[in-house]
Amino acid sequence: MGGLLEPNGPVEMVILGRARDLGGFEVRRVLPFAQRRMVGPFIFLDQMGPVDFAPPAGLDVRAHPHIGLSTVTYLFDGALTHRDSLGSEQVIRPGDVNWMTAGSGIAHSERTPGELRPAGARLHGIQSWVALPAAAEERAPRFAHHGKLDLPVVEGEGLRVRLIAGALYGARAPVETASDLFHADAMMEPGARLEIPADWIERAAYLVSGAVTIGEQAFEAGQMMVLKPDARIVLTATAPSRLMLLGGEPLEGPRYIWWNFVSSSKERLEIAKADWRAGRFGAVPGESDPLPLPES
Image 1: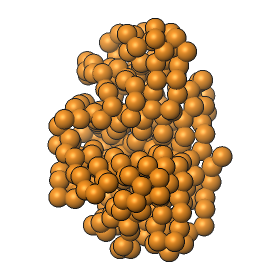
Image 2: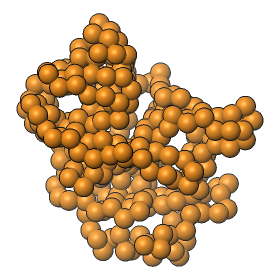
Image 3: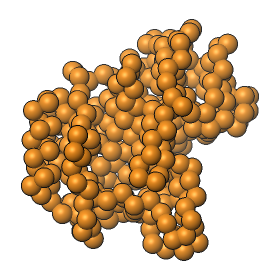
């Protein structure tokens, strides 16, 4: 299921995640949505799982390309091995952040580590894309990994918030970003209250699990609450809950998406298609069967 709920009070829009099958692996797609393409610079958000793979299966996303964005991978459970055309190889585990800036072009793969497959692998997490400002769209690609111990944690009564990127609640994550944004993982016990500051024009909270209220409105897992600018937002948990907080300043113009490419220019998307067909993104070490360009 998926769709749009009518706005009310301080909530501008509620987006229901839509199930998408990615070759035998189901995700819940939240962004982009027909009536809301972006929140700040965030242009894509998938919830991966939770899923338990039967041995020896796991997630196998073959090498594929990106331009014009940063991919952000954050896990709640399980592990993934990232490899890219820069030669990076990194296992990401729960609470870590993989932040890959594609810029002018990069290819990467994501696979369940081999040592986890015999016992049956589990995976649950979030992958989001952050569109780059026009001035940074053609920057050199780069990859950064930040372990969970390097990410600041802000705690309150019944609250624990790990900052993934940007600044929030007086803390700042070490992740380098190209624009003003915030991204955080918030855990709430029943009865806990969490205010989302109105420091950015565009803000949203995606409810991974549990249940919360904002004023008189109740929300459940799988919903993204897009918040009205300048509105005072206080979340109250009515069950043990986990939310992804995200947002920032809108970019200077629209962004176009085709497959894994994001750009402010439709013409640039066509160049990226031709580059992938011709093998100009570079090889990903350890990968021999890259994903082909879609037919449509």
